[in-house]
Length: 89
Image 1 (cartoon, rainbow, N blue to C red):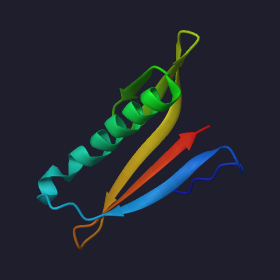
Image 2 (image 1 turned 90 degrees about the horizontal axis):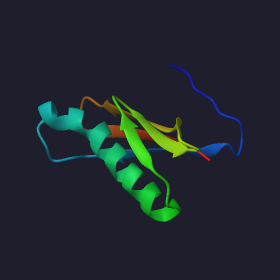
Image 3 (image 1 turned 90 degrees about the vertical axis):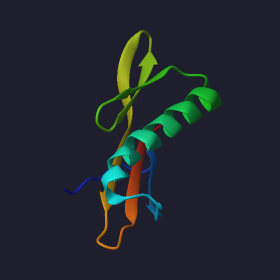
């Protein structure tokens, strides 16, 4: 699917990973990335975060949960994984 965002609206990046784990365990990668992102945001910005299965990071603002980020992972035939993160700012 195609996706676009206005300039300066967020931090959007992809990382190529080559995890040394069996392919059957790669399904955990988006969740682990979400936990890492939620922890980093909580510590750096002092905000309440939550994860919504399967790939959303939520922030609590004025008592209301709002989507702040999305995380996607795609495996390649050679065992690598492209991990994409889009963080609204």
